[in-house]
Each structure stands twice: as C-alpha cells, then as structure tokens.
Length: 238
Image (cartoon, rainbow, N blue to C red; front, side):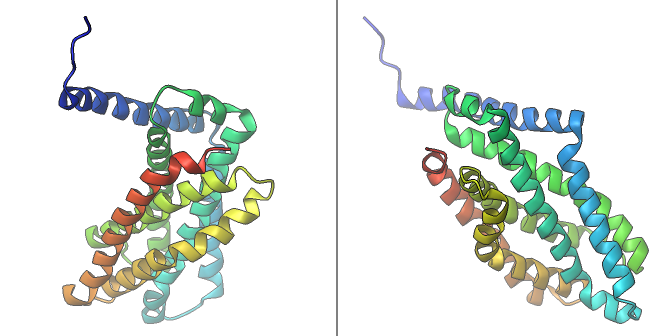
C-alpha cells in the first residue's frame, strides 16, 4: 500500500524544485542573451543615446543639472526597460519556446519569476553602465549606496509589473504598441516615488523626506509581486 506523505514534507520537497525551475528559466535567458547580445545591446545603446541627447540639449549650470538628474535617469531607465521587456517575451513567442515553457512540468509562476530575474538583471547591468557615464557627463556623483538602493527598489517594481504585462501583450499582434499603453499607467506610482526619492537623496534631504517614498516603493513591490504570482497562470492561458 502507498504510504501517506505529510503535506509539510511535500512542501519542503517542492520548494527546491520550484527554485531550480526559476533558476533554469533565468539562466536560459541570460545564457541566450550573452551569446546574441541582441537585447542588452539595444537597451544600452538606447540609454546612452538618451543621456547624451539630454546632455547636449540641457546646457544648464551645475545646480540645475542636479535638480533634473532624477527625472532624466528614470526616463532613460523606464524606456530602456520597456524595450527590454517587450523583446524578452516576443523572442519566446517568435521562436515557439513559450509553448515549451508552458508545457514543462513545473508551476507556471516559476516561469514568471525566472523572467523577472533575467529582465531585472538586464536592467541592472544597463544601470551599472549608465550611472558612471552620466556622472562623468553631468559632473554629478551617482555612485552612492542610498541612490543605488532606490534604483534597485524602483527597478524591481518596474520589472515585476512589466514582465506580467509583457506576457499579456505578447499574445496580440500589436504587442510593441500595446505594452507601453498597458504598462505606464500602472507603473506611475513607482516612477513618481522613485523620482521623488532619488531627487530628495541627491538634494541632500533628510531621511524624513526620503522614507515615505521608499516605503511606497517597498509596498508597491510586495503588492504587485503577490498579484503577479496569483494571476500569471491565467495571463498565459490562450
């Protein structure tokens, strides 16, 4: 007779398998991108072009440049991130590998979290290159732990929502146009909070002015990660 397996044991056994599936999806995307460099190159070139255009267009004094730094940075990262999110899902759809992922004997939320990790990695790599270039062009020190924390929280919120909506938009023929239309209204809170927190930090404001925006970023990340975890299975159903 088959032995009864306690639920607690099943949960403990399932957790490593889930994490392995998440890591496999993320590693697949990272390995494929390191070979082709198609997605990363597009995001990086776009980001560098934007900050170069702003550099020559905004011939401002040092103090004024510092006041617009947060806005310029997040405009750059938001549009570059949207480009990366759209391409990461459309490549899966065009190559037919999305069907293979959905047929894999794993929880579909593992596919979502794997995609989130790879998309976040691409965005953070671009940010790591853009920040020193921006600091050199604008004569502003952006390599500060507090600002990096704000960028990380904002990027997580942006990617968490963007990955879910990209999976939804990829099913349509107008996916490149539909994704920004769906994404930007939803990420307005995280963009506003990130810009406000970044601007307050660069202006030298105290923790009392920065903490409310950081709290908003953390709450946004937690809420939308939970929502995406619950609805991703339904989003990818055709």
